[in-house]
Image 1 (cartoon, rainbow, N blue to C red):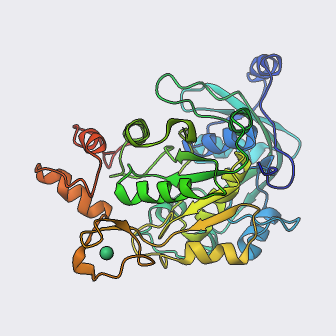
Image 2: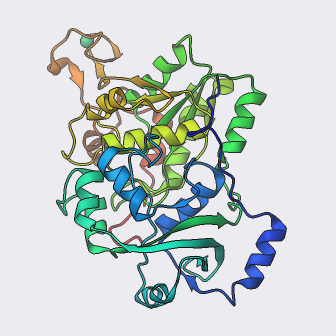
Length: 391
Ligand SMILES: [Zn+2]
């Protein structure tokens, strides 16, 4: 069954064309701030219902509840804070003059109108506490924690309204939850499994997708790569999308896979991110969710299977499909996991990103047990990684 949105109602806070024009006309009279790109992504995701039941940015009470209990004040599971900090000093001055009940125009970096915040509160938060609870560490070697600790500690709370998302100019469209649900319905799919990813697909990824598609209780796969702001050294968003397109074109039953990019900031929060990303995919209409090893982890910050166990503590209304680490085994002659392969590690091919990047960098042929040739060809193009200085 296509599940209900988290909390029972798919939020819709996208401004109609008339409202947008009215609001945009007003913006000269409204105080305005320019949030960081991550929060502009969140603004849009709240408005289209991807973060249902959230209708805006969290206040101090909601933040406390999420950090302390992993739930919203009403008791619904919710694992990560969704905050609107104010990064620019000139906007912080504006924020100090605001009062509850004020409307605030939210602008992008170029001054374009993106939405309105109906201010309910301005509050200071403890960055170290947020880091410790959400990411389980205050170690600045963690990319999200580093940004959090060096960022602003004042946030604005309140419901938002956003302009409609801009259609993609190239590549597959970024579907809204309403659009993905409508698409699933129109194809007669009841049980769609979401596939979270942030790296181009190698053979072990493909294996998890295939095994999932073989399941009797799965009608189709929703490949939903997170391609918002990533971290330095990650593959560029368009590279990730093109690699999945190549895999889908060459190796997937075309009527059982949907590929759509998902622009949000990647939160490398391990188990809490896995739960958050699952809730979000339920809002997109998926009833199943693939959780591999160390999902949404970074470095060695998380136990690789903590992302499985968190689903035992929180029932978020989507069935987690939990898979052990997959690898190619030369003795089996196939991709496998420890559940099926009896052979020692010496028979198994390491499909880690480190190994794959080393193989790509070597310039030599790429073993087909690592990458499909169509994917390898894309990853060998120049300039596929985000440089350290990318904003
Ligand atoms: Zn084996």
